[in-house]
Figure (cartoon, rainbow over the protein chains, first blue to last red):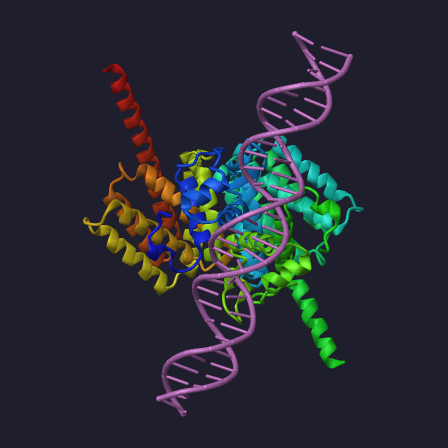
Length: 251
Length: 251
DNA sequence: TATCTGATATTTGTCAAACCTATATTTAAA
DNA sequence: TTTAAATATAGGTTTGACAAATATCAGATA
């Protein structure tokens, strides 16, 4: 192995090797879709055993940096990075953060309002027919009284995703994955009981029309109203809970 | 093993087990800091071998979901999720996306402008002395003509981080990790050659003073000017490159 | 000749058993 | 009572083997 002793001393050879390969990928020494040496060759060249190499490779696979195929012509390949894969990673971690109460709903709503306002403004400039139709389709779905709460929330997420996509800004879309995949589901999970679907759909409708007319003021106003409504619903849910708690305490 | 056959059939037992444990963590069946069964017990209860269990655990460790300690009272523990760890994961992936040219600089600058404008506005409301001092310290450092380009860029990143921290909004800070750890270094890497430090520091100074005075208009104006200057620098760099290319073609 | 079939080689996936290393606890000695 | 050594328990690593998937190629068959 080429590593110095003091780099190895605090256990974790597999971790070191993973970092080594990862940096090779990140700074381009290993190109996309390029095949890594076989696990045996890696083991030999690092001077470690194959299972240890495999543990290192599994770490990379977990980060969607490589994938593996069996057989001749198989091997471990550098993955083409895709925002989709990144979104999954972000979602899990962000959901966990929200789950342990690292953030409170008011903060989340402020963040949603500020960032989605940007999206409304950019979407008014750059929206295309495809995006408008995607939003209209979700609105139509949300008008159906028969769909379940889960389906309604899923459609809500897709509506906001379409809004974000309409901005046509890749970096922003990347950032908004956190909102779409984590903050929106969380807010939905908390407030969907007290929220009236018709109200939400009406706000969605207003946003859609405003985007269609490239009316930035109306779009952001509708979004602001939507999130104010969500916040009110949340406070109503809080009140209901504390009222129930009081009643239980009295009885 | 409790998994059904058709869930296992297409190889990847380790992957399945990792997903299994991960979902247990995400939906709270395994609480934070709780110890998992020993690797041997996991192997037994899943009906697989210990190396395979370890591959699964390494996947989770790579996602910062668990960490391990040796010895009695050691074991694998569910990690308390921290934004820092998440930021590293996001950064790597986002950097990769930028590295392969998935985004262009104009998009990135638009995204930076829009999101950092939010931060200026919220920071004007919520900034505290600590944050202002952190920004002032970086400005002082950036005035030093002797520091290297790397150090200047690192200080630039810390300045913007202090700006984001001053918003006091956790969810927004999470999102802004992508900007701070990935977009800003990328823009710096591309334009720092043609950029004059004095100009940049002057913009930083204006932002700092505006925040200090809670002057939202001036803060966002300074930010806008800063990013316009960055964009101009980028275009200048592009021009210089194409001019060099022309000269080379003529000679 | 063209095409299908099966043997073969290569590479990852999994397993088993052992040993090394770190560390908390317990025991024994000073 | 304090300190030092033994011990038990956990993860960390190695060796060696076999299983499963799959591209390639030789040979049989139409």
